[in-house]
Image (cartoon, rainbow, N blue to C red):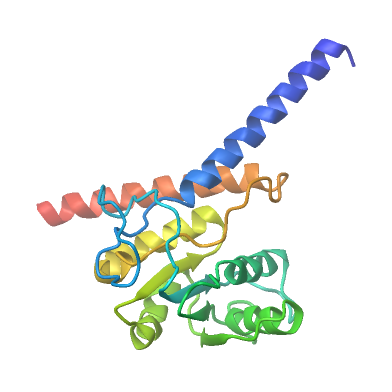
Length: 231
């Protein structure tokens, strides 16, 4: 292959990877909270509600980390669930007052709930020894959040922050659902540990395209509902 063609191919690949990194980075920082109602954490500057770009501020807080499951064909966690469990654990802030992980997901394909598969992997393989709760009934992202809310309410304190963990775009979609259902809880949303620069470079471009398409569809649905409510 001529040197020029190699250079063009390299530039195209670099552009694709840069696009994917930027898309995931941006998504991990969207639809977060505004810091209102969290008494022990430094309040975030107020801007567009749900679109804060501030870093995670969990020192001194009571962390609530919601880890979303993915359809699993067997008893062993697939690659996506392994990633989400790891991202949930790396969301834990050692400087937090307390931390509880809420693993979400029902038995969508097999008999074992995704939540249980996530928790087993976190404890048996990753060495997690902290507190956890299981939400084992949901079969969609909307249900993940709806069914996690009662568990969040049970754990809620004035110092609580909430992180939703998945891949970046899916987590943003789930945060949007929480804004729709419970804005009072959504104001406590802070970044999870789903984004790391350079992680899974061959998967990210495809995930970015799919995730952005799903979020665009979600935004259209939200806009349609807003118009309908105004009529």
